[in-house]
Length: 292
Image (cartoon, rainbow, N blue to C red):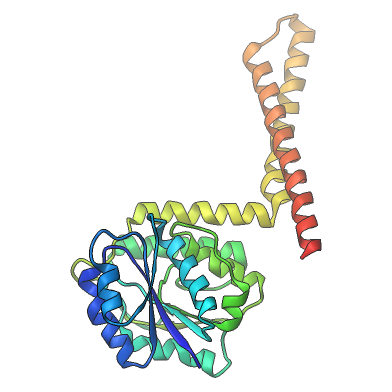
């Protein structure tokens, strides 16, 4: 069985050597996606025998995850473990995350920072991750505790059925939502994460906005009539209400209230645009699903 540990890496020369050696000591192949680093990330990885995929330009965390999935398929890997290269994760957790797949109990295993283990995670980051996880759960009817964990293992079924498209941090939620749609079995296990020193390189604000944008996009595609149709209907009702009020006022006073009329026209136009958008998207998605 071919097990590959894949790490997205951007300027991680200071952490890579020890991580690669520890992972190789466990008996796993190491795959590095160098996301256009300007330091010696690729050189260090290659010297230690890791497989390296290089990006000509920086594509972001999601772009690196996409490359790790693609290269793992090319290598015909049976299991891919994604592992952050910033020094937060413990390599000793890797076998634990692989075991449920080996036992056929899971297709995708998440290393959760919120199960039974107390970490030194900054409070603002903990609150942010829990909010993003809640948003991911709402959009996919799941009950995951840590949707943003970068420590995960995927079996071959996942590699063959999941094709991430997000370039930014939203890829973590995208994968879970798509895994739910594909009816893949997801399991979470507790892991220990270190926040000491200079580890995480992800800006929490950018991270949060990326996840929210990705989730909104997926929901709008999955339920276009709900996402666009309901707001469109609400705007139409508001517009009609203003229209009736404006006409009634004109009938009584022969005076056109400009603000009220503009609100009526604007609400009706927005409502019609949203409704038409929902109908068009629903039609396109239905055709695509039928072809699949």
